[in-house]
Image 1 (spheres, rainbow, N blue to C red):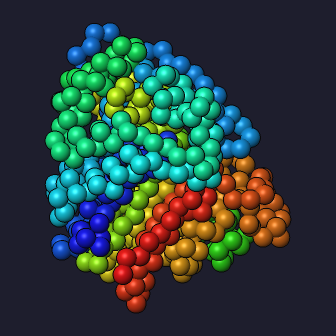
Image 2 (cartoon, rainbow, N blue to C red):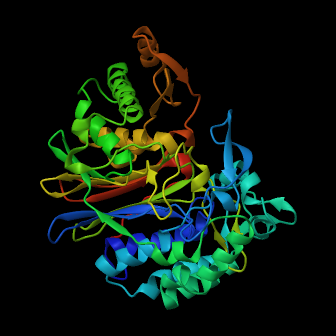
Image 3 (tube, rainbow, N blue to C red):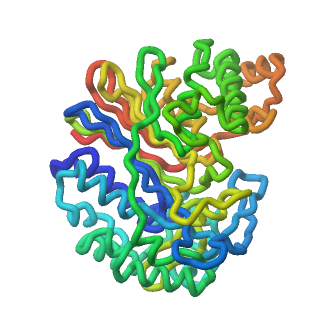
Length: 478
């Protein structure tokens, strides 16, 4: 899209559509997400919130119904219970969000952005080892229903590395969206198919839910960090403000990977956890915002992220997700719906139509008003730590974007400080001497997130990198 003369938004939308095909285990038309857009012309930054909404508009009785449960191993050792099925499906926003971003900022024709994705869906994508690993982890979900088995099964077995994932129904859906626009999924033929199937399977999404869904534009949360400005996803989502809060507390101590630097990060992570649990001090809720971190914040497990900077200095950070997936594929469409209602516990369910909160944190770092770093990550509760550590590695430690992403990470879970494989054992020994309960991982793992970032150097050149933990990639178009 960049070679065709498109801008950063065109490229991000085109890449997002391809991700619906190549990473259909993580995202798709049934997803929700956020796009942070920085426009070079007037140096304005906005976040388009197209995350999922609570279903049930027009229904009598409770919208939350009993969900099916499966045990999934996300972290290579301990299983986590996932709630799936039609009752777990929230109202998706991805298609409308991409269309609104394109309408406001894009330059290439809408239909042209779909061409690569349609071709890949019809011809098929050969699974890499990383993609096959996700299929293995999510197998109980991906092959939960006859409709999902028709997509994710080959000769009665799950897909493995080297197999080709063909999605002809999804190709037809993409063609409809390219020709008729996102309204097809919110009031047209696709909307009717989606609602009929979900309601027949005891889910709560109604035609009114889809028809009344809207993309929300928000001002990003912002904070100063080491002479740079950090911007990210604002409330009601939690991730961006937690990162901004943490950067403001972080001591400039030690080099990357040193015990002193890790200790500073871990202490900040502990304060972030306390802040999240306590819903922040009243002083952090300026501007009359509602509770920043409510009980209904979604812990998203399956996420994809795209970062783009174009030659004019426009920048995009786009994060989207179907959660762990619901196992519900709308017949004849290839649309795998999210399981966001099953991704969190609701002591008091939100009202139908209300936007849910998320930890997703598409982020931008500005220096002298120009993009210095565009970054975001997958990784459930670990994604905000991944983003924060990459920002620190680039801005504070001066690392290039590839090294910043590739360096081993840490994550504080309760009192356990998880240290990814690749750390210097002597530095971990020092951490234990400081009093930290260190859990040592033998190698890198997607447990610690899956980031993608673009960096503009002081010389004005661009560099891009994806996360080796998830088979990510970076491309610079010259």
